Structures are given as structure tokens and as C-alpha cells.
Image (tube, rainbow, N blue to C red; front, side, top):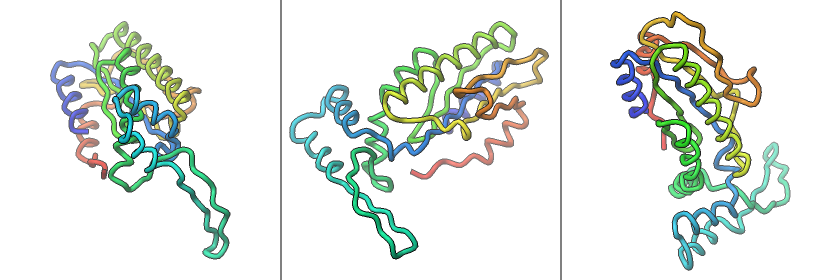
Length: 210
């Protein structure tokens, strides 16, 4: 988050406005497709042979059971997706799994920061109606392509926790179109945030535990 904060402060120094979208993903580690992950490791990162077999042995043949009221347990079920949470390797595998997502985002926006299930998309622009309208269109097109990429790769945006924020140095004197950050405009939260409010917010932001 320090990189995001620094970029936003630099934008403020130039008297620009920043459009920030904070994406939240649903059950990210649990829905990673093993087949897609192995294909990504092999074709994008050149992992093959014995090393790729190590990853397969680490993820294959895993099972899970459900315990209810401490005395009722389901039969074991095979897991063909997901990477172990609470492990050192799990987050690394997830970052590799979504690596091509950043190629999708870079086609629309100059700046993105993310780790695991939290991603921040942001872009700065001059505070005039034309630049604002073009920026909103670019952000919406980016989110639409991100959503499509996630559907193909068996991930999903958590619309209820996704937030849209317009960060300004001074109040805008023209109306701003609402950014559609989800499949329907009723989801997500959008705020117009002036510098003083943003400064109070960043002092409460904490670095996520990894």
C-alpha cells in the first residue's frame, strides 16, 4: 500500500485527481484450478520435468472432510482445486497463477498493485469533464476485462467489498459519472474523497499480514 499512497500523493502535488478501485476477490486460494496452475507454471515460467512433478505431488491427492458439532464427520472428498492457506508456498503459487492478469490490466491502466485477494487499480488525470469521462470509461473497460479473465480462470470479484474512490485536492465543480465496478451498478461502494479525508484514511491503513 505504500506504493499506492506515494503515487496518489504525487498526483495531488500535480493538482490531479486519482480514481482508485480496490478490488476484493472471493475465496481466492480455494478456487485455484490445479490444471490451469500447472499449465501456467510450464508455459509461462518454464517449469517442467522433475520440478513440475514436485508441484503436482504437493497439490494432487489432497482430501478434505467436514466436521459438524464435533461428532459428525463427512466422508473425505478429493480436492482438484485450491492451494493451501497458511503455507509459504500457497501465496507464491497464487501470485504465479494470476500473473497474466496484470497483462490484461496494463492494456487499460498505467498503475496496479496487488497481492493475493486485494488489488488496487488506479489512474490519475486532470480535473476536467473530458478527462474524467475518458478515465471512467477506461476503468470500466479494465474491470470488465478483469472480470472476464477471472471467469475463465475460475476466480470471482467480491462486489460487496469492492470500493471505488475518487481522490481530489479540492471539490470538483462538475458531476462525476458513477463507475460501474460490478456486473450491476447497485454493487460496490463509491466515494469522492478530498485530500484532508484521504490523509486521515491512510493513517489508519495497515500493511496486511503475509
